[in-house]
Amino acid sequence: MPIMEVQNVSKRYSNGDGIEGLSFSIEAGEVVALLGPNGAGKTTTIRCLTGLYQPDQGEILIGGFPPGHSQVQKQVALIPDQPYLYPELTVAEHVQFRARGYHKGLKQIKEKVYDALQEVHMETKMNELCGRLSRGQKQRVVLAGAIVQDATLFILDEPTVGLDIPSKQWLSDWLKQKSRQGGSALVSTHSLEFVLDTASRVILIRDGDIMKSMDVPQLKDEQVGWRSEVIQLLGEWSSV
Image 1: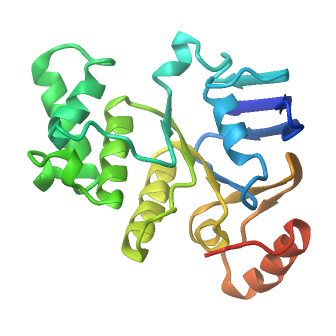
Image 2: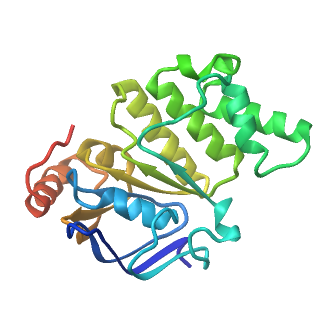
Image 3: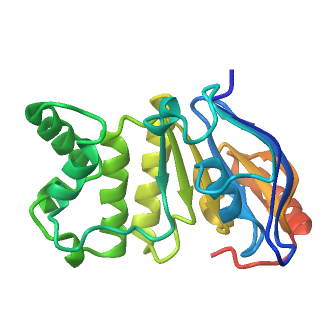
């Protein structure tokens, strides 16, 4: 059974922009990329999937329940395009604040916070103020919050924007690690290179419509033709 099922979902704004009739699913252990140029409908899709927007039509089920259901809130973690943190809290305090929403007992919370910060390689920064962190470090703190939540589905909206090359590589490796552990991820991005490095499958979206769902080739000699097909379907766009 898929961890997420999307059936004929549409969401239109007053100016006519939005998404139309999207249908796809995500299996446990998959890293799926939602790939398309800016304005393709990726963020609107993410907001519908996480319950921030109510679709005009269609159905979204996560583990058999709609977004926003109490059974879904712990299971799904949204990592937004801007990693907002409380600037006057320390790294540990921010993650503890997140953990208290899902766990009871101060000892258990402290252990989970340290383990999560260790997983994202931020344990040495745990007493540093969040306002002093780089963008990549802030993103890791957001991911630590998702880890203490015990999420099994990670939804990331344009996670590579503003990251340097080492931070992008770390994020790619982390997502593949979560996949091997049975976790799933949907990554909204306009970066073709990040898709090739990270995803097992890609959903191509343009002008609010899904163009095609494709497996991502693992062999370098297969990627040239695949890349050409993707660009032909979506048109030229920034793929840095």
